[in-house]
Amino acid sequence: MPQSTAHRAPFRADIVGSFLRPATIKNARLAFAAGDINASELRKVEDEAIRTSVEQQCACGLHVVTDGEFRRAWWHFDFFDGLQGVERYESEQGIQFNGVQTKAHSVRVVGKLGFGEHPMLEDFRYLKSISGDAVPKMTIPSPSVLHFRGGRNAIDSTVYPDLKEYFDDLANTWRDAIQAFYAAGCRYLQLDDTVWAYLCSDAQRQEIRQRGDDPDQLAQIYAEVLNKALAGKPDDLVIGLHVCRGNFRSTWISEGGYEPVAEVLFGTVNVDAFFLEYDNDRSGDFAPLRFVRPGHQQVVLGLVTTKNGELENPELIQARINEAAQYVDINQICLSPQCGFASTEEGNSLTPEQQWDKVRLVTELAEKVW
Image 1 (cartoon, helix red, strand yellow):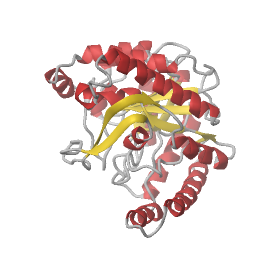
Image 2 (cartoon, helix red, strand yellow):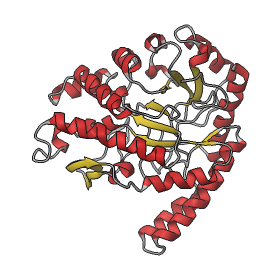
Image 3 (cartoon, rainbow, N blue to C red):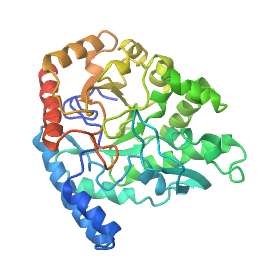
């Protein structure tokens, strides 16, 4: 892949994807749930809010735009809902974050996996139609996310008695997704993945062992699934992988540096860019970046937190970029916020003004550094 520039994905100033939902979206969703407006009317409200958000992203100096995930309640479940063979259900409890729990939703595999005519293809087409000179980026969850949380128990054993067949279908489903979004005009796709961060956490690794899985073996399996999904990827399609430690109402799940997975993740997974959270001590140091392959893959450093509204010191961010450059060529480094601002519709604990201030900080710093 050509080296990243200010005007080629991944961008020197980039974003992870989600933005705080405006009041118009929240009110329309409530009205839709109450039966006061129909799906078409809801979509018109979403369309207008997305158009406004795209304009704001461009006004902040970005050359990449997303739809803010405004049509979703969750960063992952809404995508899974549109897959063949996947069923969402009300679980006994939500996902436990640091001091707070999500709504009680989960998914399970009840039939053969497939991509089909996924509704988010139309979501991307709308984004592309309003993106102007900016590059429209689509964000979807990574395939490992569908498997990890429920594991074997969330996969119907009569449909997939052999997990090898399941992982083959998982890879093929995402390969079909990649091709379908490409056919819809997508040239920049991001896979969001919490699992690699869980595999860095001592506490999470212990939980994985307790349920009968080997965390190191899972890392190998997920790398193979990703590479199978990426096989045959068009040369002009840039695919990034965002490694997230959890992002719900400004809280998190896992902690620990990237060292436990660095050699497998950075050394073998064939994405074009790694979006890595580096906004606090829980993320560890930059030493694992030594495994990033020279001259090919980009590292998008998430040095600006989305967890709160306090604006970072530009000089400290620049110093951290220089520190990371001790392990990977600075020409392979880009800058972004650490995560999305609203991985779920609830959003993080900051104001829209603070959100846009952080985006402007990223673009201004990238212009200065590169």
